[in-house]
Length: 336
Image 1: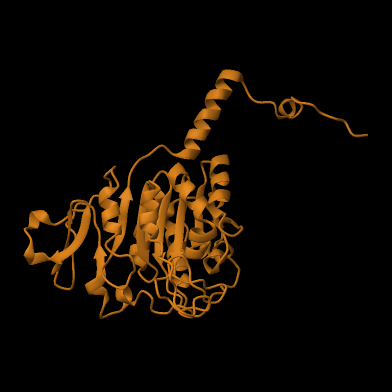
Image 2 (image 1 turned 90 degrees about the vertical axis):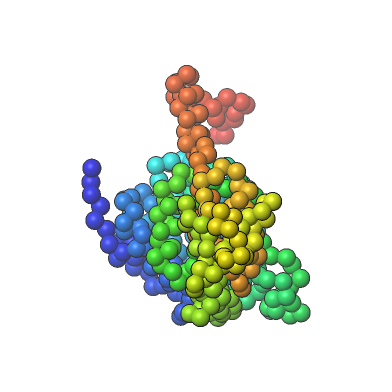
């Protein structure tokens, strides 16, 4: 077996990276390139497909195969790629506007089908490429160029949405936390089926410090709820806060106010998504305590593998297909 001795530079293309100075996309790009170098997959077997938006420039900057597709349709195109060749490692890069507005239908069906895709959803809670309109994840009351009186739309919670679509792998991380991001990328790559990773990504031009509660030096220790399998969910500078789940509802309590047995022990491998969903509802907007990590990681039949299995079964029974015969099976005409 060939040993792949890649470095991050091997995954850097010759294209100049063109995002606004200080954009969180730079850090995400560095994290992905660093992980790709240790992933153990040949570059020619890796594909990045994006839709439209700032995040969707990603394929230009990866020295792999890739496609900058059309608005919201990246999951559909990526589904075709992986179904045609299940041996590829196919990654989708999208944003909150691209994935959850025009692309919402494509996203949920990729999730429910469990296509073997790794979907990186950059969530900056704003439309950056089109210069600062509110997006499907912008908070109620958000004042933007398209909502001068404040948004009256209730925002999507991408993790809750994915769990509602019965996604087999759902996680959340932060653009600036490269170590955590790489850990999540590794788990997503190892997962068979659709893996959705929501990445909170700062847009320092149109929505700066939207995630300051989770990234600010003075705030983050109070608000980052780190979920680790097999561990009770306790957080805070002095571990003074904990999460309990009662009657299907997750809530935050003072650690010393409950018996240790009442504190929820995280298990992302639970087949029933109820607990994961309850955790996703702890925060509808990241301006306070917010769960980070892997919400769900379960095994389900993988769409592209099942398609290949069906084709193999039919081929074994009936022999290889004849495309020309299929084309001419109905009425045909010869044009002179």
